[in-house]
Length: 147
Length: 147
Length: 147
Length: 147
Image (tube, rainbow over all chains, first blue to last red):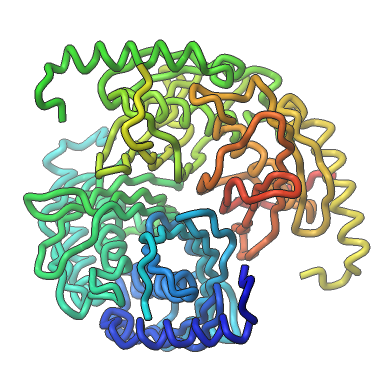
């Protein structure tokens, strides 16, 4: 995958790309999503569940959990400096997101096939159980780069 | 579907349920999501795309579009006064959500099979083209009611 | 949708495309899938559940139900004579497919956005209840045509 | 995960369950699907792409690729001797399945949450590239066992 460059260099590039993206990413910041760690083909992000994220059943609105997973995929899929946008995503909700908890999402690359990349994301409570499992496909936009 | 009650009564119940849910739904209000219309098995909701919803590529973060679709499914699926929660969702993003536009999501019931209900949701720009297509399954939580 | 041609002409084209595809489609024939009806942007297909389709739990293997839905999407999505291939599909299984029953799948177009088309497919028993709900995205392969 | 029993015992149970399931599984045998390896929470299965699996575009009908992935999930998800049935699945097709090739599917458990289990399945050509990525949720049927 990283032919011609060491893993160290690929991870350093992933870091530079992520910093540039995050600086532009009002949405993730508005949602309280933080970048915890990133490397070539993967990313880990966190989001605290706040009161204003609760839905009519008084648990975290699924849209916030999806947003966290989607952000993790965005940082993982752009990490090789190819502009990549989400195309198809599926998510299964396993347990409610409880107020006051910190959620962690870890995205990892499953396949890289021409213009399509596949990512698996697991969302869990910090030191706790899995809340949701997400699977997503991104499309590479030609040769566009982030940095 | 509405055996034993007229469509008018079913729609009036849907309205009462929706009002009770929306009053509790901090998440939808925080996201700027409004309930435009609701009936037995369907709902239409709207959300304006604001600056703070833009991602690192400067288009609407997919999480907000998902949230709008998920809220529409929530109001459609609870409309018969049976507590229903999202279990599995898939979404395909067709066009970017552009800042300043109003998005509309319309959810309609496809199937109601025991404890599982299926909903199709289309998200489009007001007077414009389809932005995303969403498919979701909800689980009914026993005999719990909303109102 | 059918600007510049009447619905009748669009449906006649759909029929010609479907006949050409079906003649080449060993898989659908092997699976016992028949084309019941087709028009511009939609198709209806059927498949009897046979003994050899039963899985280790002695109900119809989900793969056959998926195959029927996927075939219906294929005929609906190619019906305007643009070569279209399945890219992303999700399916929810609601009830078991029982041996000896005839399953019907009806596919309809939800959106047509550039190179991506979206289709909703419902699979039910003949004169009976919904067995599965399928949602799929196809990709148009440039300007290639079928007939 | 395997508290109270060694991995060896869990894998031996997985083998016994798989043998009992496969003996009943007419569908997998009809499709030419073979069980290559199985353990607690995972399974690997194979299927040759034959002429009769080709669709109207003369590549492997997506339904057969889905069937292979779904069978791999079935054997992985039942491997702890709890009857588990597919509920929701999503699949992304990355490359065509070519006639004469042997496809391999490997399923692994991502989460086990009460009555729901999540599985990731990758389908690739033997010694080759990824053909499809599948994500699925199964539902455990109470305390029913296979052997």
